[in-house]
Image (tube, rainbow, N blue to C red; front, side):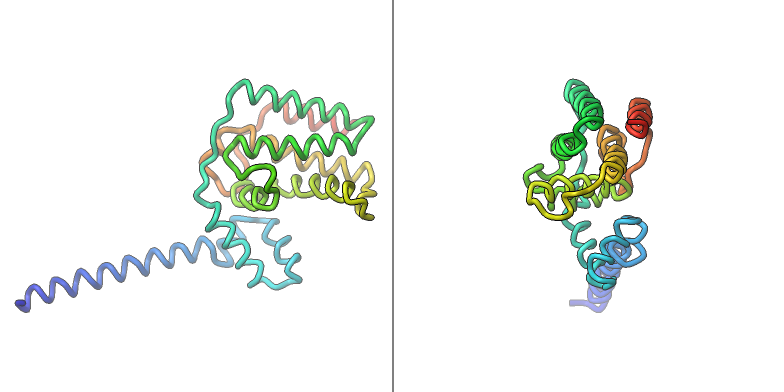
Length: 212
């Protein structure tokens, strides 16, 4: 093998190694501490708190969520399904006035079904579904957690099931933000944070809930 060929091979190997290192650094930036803080926002702080202030453990958990669910592509909703979901939200909101706990149960089920329809894990796998939602709708996913907690603690008969009406109203308002995000097809490519344009019915219904 000539010296020239050897030199060419060395250059190729060095180039491949450099490219692999660059990709590794890029991936580390997306799942490193500062990258995770930007991506998850308040959810980052809540995860650190759940780990008793252990940021490293929290970042390992959040990084695992990104690796597992980061490539998920959200599916658009069929127009008929969208109308049904909107009608069910309106019905749950009206029910909240007289039966807030039953309304919370309706919303918990509705959010799980809508998320499933958008391509997230099935509603029967709440923890897995929540983790995936937190990757793509980090700003608003906490409302789903609050609603689900009220519903499940009530079912289990634990002391937390005695959530007051005002606490449940606040949870519903937070859940509405996630519902609006899931109704918005602009989010189907996984934007990291929720956001995008909002529908006029969202503002109207949130205002009605505040006054209920």
